[in-house]
Amino acid sequence: MRLYLLDYGAGNVQSLANSIKKLGYDFTWVSSPEDFEKATNLIFPGVGAYETAVGHLRSRGLFEPLRTYIQSGKPYFGICIGMQVLFQSSAEATTDGLGIIPSPIEQFDDGDKSVPHMGWNSADIVDPSQAEDITNPSAYYYFVHSYCAKYNPEKYPEASQWAYATTQYGQELFMSSVRKGNVFGTQFHPEKSGAAGLALIDSWLKSSGTGQVSTPSTSLRKLQPKPKHLLTKRIIACMDVRANDQGDLVVTKGDQYDVREKSVTADAAGAVRNLGKPVVLAEKYFDAGADELCLLNITSFRHSPLRDQPMLAVVRAAAERVFVPLTIGGGIKDSVDPDGTPRPALEVAGAYFRAGADKVSIGSEAVYAVERLRQSGWKRGDGTGAIETIAHTYGRQAVVVSIDPKRCFVDPETYQGPYRDELVFGKDDGPETTRGKAWWYQCTVSGGREAREVSAVELAKGVELLGAGEILVNCIDRDGTGLGFDLDLIRSIKKAVRIPVVASSGAGKADHFVDVFSQTEVEAALAAGIFHREEVKISDVKQALKDAAINVRD
Ligand code: 1PR
Image (tube, rainbow, N blue to C red):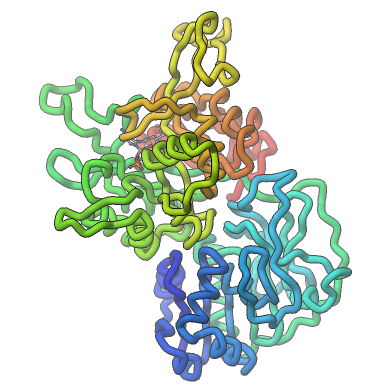
């Protein structure tokens, strides 16, 4: 087999390369149109924005050779954009697709759900007699996309013949996998879908390697959406990474963002808390069933991240061992190298994506961007900021904004500031420290060191407008306390936006995850300290959620 992978130069294609290496196959990157003739098998792991992907293929002269390759009948496997490009057109772009499947790629309706569709969902085989091969009907796969091929046999009878598996999101049914002859595609990312995803890639490589992939006899089925979709709630393990006093990158953990040891022995007091090595912990959490991992470089505001090779090396090494989504944060902003070379945020993010990150998380820079947006009268930005440029090139689903709010206490009788409508009042049966008090949630920058005149709700609305695809809601007051998530804060952010929200800070026991999922609409919840200190296992959290009838991935 001469297996080729097509990289159009944007997004995380490294993870697919890592999966294939892990499965023991060799491959070559497509570097010129002639490579399509040499290839016996081709995988196009399209990640990112459709317009960028197709534009790039056209400008490199690869678009027509790709069509010729697929029409020749040689095995093709398109992932995400690699599947979408088979269709006629996309609502995301002005450029047409290959037109092999005669229907358009359309946008999800965000009236009843968050968009992007992000997380683990099922892929139901349309014709159960086909179920023996590639996808596993009982597995969950990782999706991340705002556009999809709707499954609508009445409107698109010919295109619907291609449907191999469908998935339900909200009340919409879409083709999550297509297959005809030697053409196969998945909207989900098998390279990010843990063991089930690796098994799928292996199965395609084995069957396509022999040239035996058959045309399924997909009969058109009218499928009705079920009352509820199967998208699971995500459990995320977060590693705050920084150099310790010896210069080694370690996973640390703060109490309300203070990561230095307080007392213990005289030697240890003041030292950076060291809870383990980032790559070792990442692998451990992947094996333990984490649905996603987050690595935050918490002191990156101090230096130029592109020269910060140890963190890039950490991402590269983690991506070789971990086959679930990886979010990398810290220092995603415009910067200048010591020799004066400007490094736009887009370039910084690109380095992380090429190393194997799926999403980048933006903290301080997002606060400044919303301050600028407010100054301009809430007109969309000029397109040059970090959020906008990264979302345009890599897709909004690749941009997470990490908020670090803390309570700003005010006297509600006299408070005349702009956040009156957002004031939260301490409950009589709540913690003593907040009883009888009122506050709003104030954003901070530089890891909580500086408070800015922007509320967390205002920030969330602003970054959604600028193009962020997900919001990670930390809470300095709750970080490391084990008191549970700040449900008031999380609920207010979730109500303010249509994009997915991740709850963070304060988890102390498995039941806190049940609370956050049953009392708010968030899609995911993140914890650090309890996992690092092995006080609670990821499997304990999932069991508690299952017991509470909340859908999770095993
Ligand atoms: O501003 O774009 O360079 O990004 C810096 C990033 O680093 C931000 O995402 C910011 O949240 C993070 N960060 C900066 N300083 C700290 C610190 O702790 N001193 N960590 C920090 C943020 C909060 C969470 C933590 C949860 C869960 N840590 O990541 O993992 O609170 O903890 P828990 O479960 O133990 O309660 P930029």
